[in-house]
Length: 177
Image (cartoon, rainbow, N blue to C red):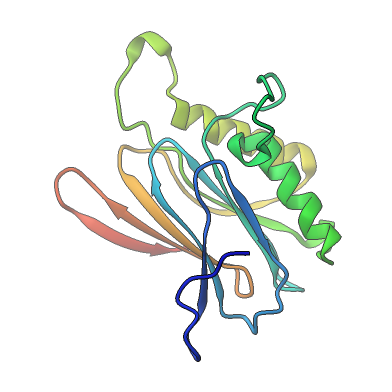
């Protein structure tokens, strides 16, 4: 696992890039943060077990991996396959399947393409909600949709998801989920 900013006493930080997913095993004394930058239509999917501190973050780019060409073999690329991969890896590290909760952020429709119907952002949100519902994982918080970019910082130990937003009009904000 790549870590950044690992000065003594500082939280360790792991960047989760587009189409990637990372699981934290809860052994970093509660100070490990998983970060994804530049979410537009992409969706950040944070899963965590509040009992063990085991959690993970995926930066999903597209909604449906079950019908996609899998020549790249990146489960983090698709909302549905990212959720299954995160959940599987978390349980392998000791998380309790029945205790896992979800938080979602992103899924903006930053561009208006009427000819395509629902944008990729909205389709990512629907795919993630459907997959989590199918697997029985409750969504406890979300900051999704709209037309603004987001960056997220997820701390599995506490289950805190910080969502930083920015808009074309220069307004910025931070929301804690």
